[in-house]
Length: 464
Image 1 (spheres, one colour):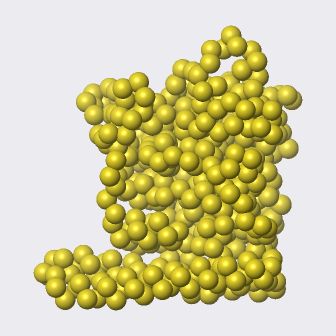
Image 2 (tube, rainbow, N blue to C red):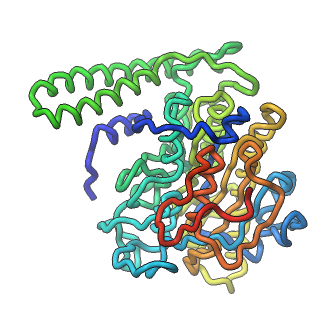
Image 3 (cartoon, helix red, strand yellow):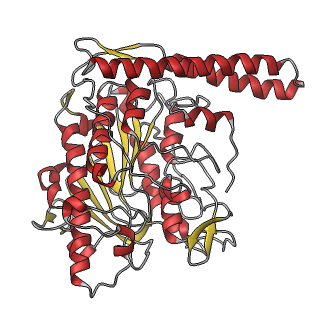
């Protein structure tokens, strides 16, 4: 499928952020008035879970997490979690539960699950193949992370981070973040490229980069980016003189975006409690099967450091993408994850391996929130200041069910969410409502809807 190469897409392909149009932050937010700095991070693992071995049971604050279950690694953080049950991707349904039938809601469940995850809107028609005769384009609207980032433009050096682990294919299944309709943001699987982008122009106030070779590599990458931007600016200035008035206005906006990118390349001195430059170590092939755990750990370390240093407040971390065929030889599993997820429940050995895989993802989630929780911020920790949501594109691999999608929220976003609970929603609630809650928790308290309005009824009940 051909992709239109706009200036935005070209600059992003170089690993740089393209700032969106700045919109006002709601300064009346009680969070901003109290001086809290909430962060949002979405952690995505693919191919559904195994609910009989999921682990959390009970209701409210009396809930428990079973030992030996998928979620056992999260037991130490029980008081800082919200386990959500009954949150469903109702924007995928056709007809919609409380609206007219939509003749265009294309894609299979894996494609819809990724595209709807943070946008809450149908995919566009298109030719991307999804198996089973399904096809689609990209999502038809902005994702909630980018909507929030636009509202907070200028408060941090980088509006957001879109990190991936082992993302080997393209298409709608490999994207969570969207700048707008049919505008997927690149998901970068190379942690060294993300490091160069986020920390390449930074210097520590009390320490230096881990080694001289890394310093030299970062400096070279920074110089190359500046050179490309200089070339683009000169070329666009020449083009400006040849265009009619309306096209000049449009091109001038592009040039302003380039100037904003140049500002991001200005050296930044990092300081503050918990702000340390992540240690990268030797370069690795981020797409090699054996490097999947190491690449993921580096991505998590970079995101935590970016949060702690105040470089961004928004991030997504996507492991493998939906329908990922990642293998897990360190677990003794040498089959593709997606293929395994389609096997029937009667194959107990296969089910046991799927539990192992999902438990391993729980370990990664525990590592991430543990690092956040180890950094003091104000009266609490960086985790307390954040909300980290772990989700999936479907609830179960061999049924492709879009109902009861697994969602675990860690952290309270600076005290906005009440934590330490298992919340069962009956009747089920659209995940669009959770997206509204994310906006509210990040200080956009006047927002009441997001995505498909026919299913969104406001913020998710019971979280605040």
